[in-house]
Image (tube, rainbow, N blue to C red):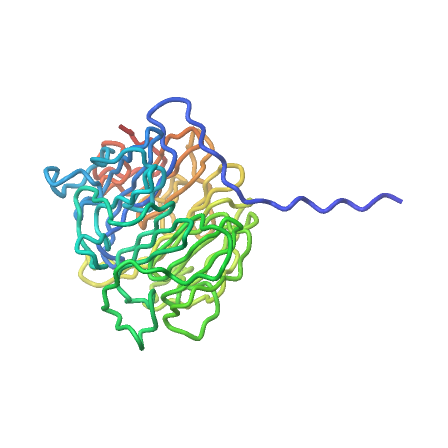
Length: 395
């Protein structure tokens, strides 16, 4: 009698590391923030090995961080954010430096007047906060964490701070502690209409708008941080009313999801995380918001799209592809996950916007594809889209 096969080792879901061999070398990649989800503009920022940050793409609200003298012109060339050094973490257009200082630019609740009012900053300003380890920023709410816990500030639009019955939605809130259940330290913060914290053990708490809480709740919105039903989460990404995560090599998505090739103004809500179909185990997933395109006169609902990094370092995308943003060399709608063609190395991370995609490779190079209307491909060729990945020229 032969012994039964041993159970396979659990998949840890960790992304491949970035190993820099030469400069310029990027170690992290994020998207910028538009003015709001109904009028998206596209851009990306990369954290470089030397502790500086480079951004490219749309700049109508100062997302590129190039200062007042640079104006609000879009840029197809990656340029450094002025005044930043020794940066260790990025989230959209906020950075945490080596000393724990938080610096923000573009649009967001940046505490210029001490409240959570939204401001527009063309150059980074340092927020008047105690040293932090992590930051998460949305258009109306931002949060920062250190060993003492979590602080958030902004508008109570989505019940981030208290039930709407006790605090009106338009209330501006100065930084205040958020009462989290006890647990391991925070690893990441993600903020859109709902807020999420990912802990070191892979547990994730959510609160705010419902959807996209990713858990069952009788509150709409829900101001009480509680766990979502996923363990061992390795990455998480949020859109306005939906979210996605990877755990144990599986990609999951939830919230208001327009998964099919339809133009439903109010797509169905998937309350709990549901697995997505992929060719191999996934280590990271990125998603975009539903938005309404008014450029042609008649409002048109643009569908969400997704991209993910597999355990092999391959990148897969699915959803709209009219500008080649799926990266398979076609403009055909990707009903299933298609492999991005032409990346010279394995990917560590992928980031998506409605009409473009960028990937951070394991050698520290960044490649982008899709629409280049705002210069969001960073290849120095404004307005010229590409159906295959092209390298971003980092400074």
